[in-house]
Image (cartoon, rainbow, N blue to C red; front, top):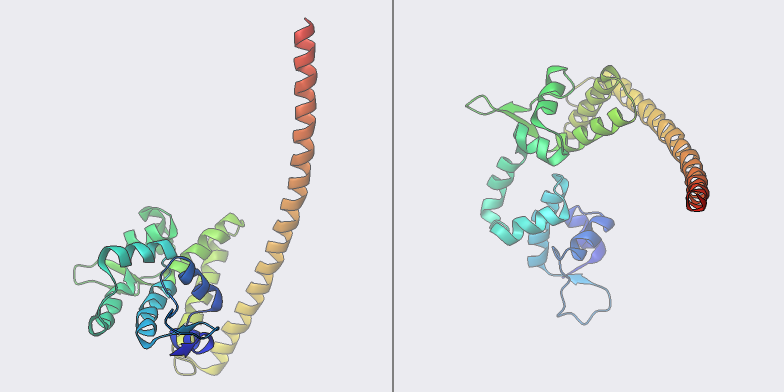
Length: 230
């Protein structure tokens, strides 16, 4: 049996992720134990490791529940092969996950913002699961008013981060790696500043709109009264 802290460490889930999994019925505690604190069995750990993989691939909790309900979780001996296949997405699958159309994905590729990780034997482009998060970031940056050139720079930094995270200290020299990471820190701080400015702007607009709605309501009442008198 595993306590919650050990269970989180072994599955790689965060506390909020585990709470969501439990809320959607994806992971259940061992009810046979008399312990006050929640415990999890070895079988639950095996299943939860597979569920965690879907979570980290970017699937939503309702989507994971549908997958389990429709086809169930793969047997442990087949899981590795299934994940190796599912770790890559076609253009259409990536577009569906990010809620954009296929043309948008292809356009980003044409501008060098995203690059396929591999190709099928038939020449179809495949993208790693990390592109789900990158493409969602691209959409957010577009909404924040970033230019395509600015977005491409940040996408390049994102890919560098993925590369360094996967192969720390081996893929690039330390100077290049540090320069990229320092630039990334700077861009993150810039994004925080932009988000703060947007939040302040939204608050101003929220107050203004509330005030104008009240004024509109008063004007409508005045015109309604005048109309009734005539």
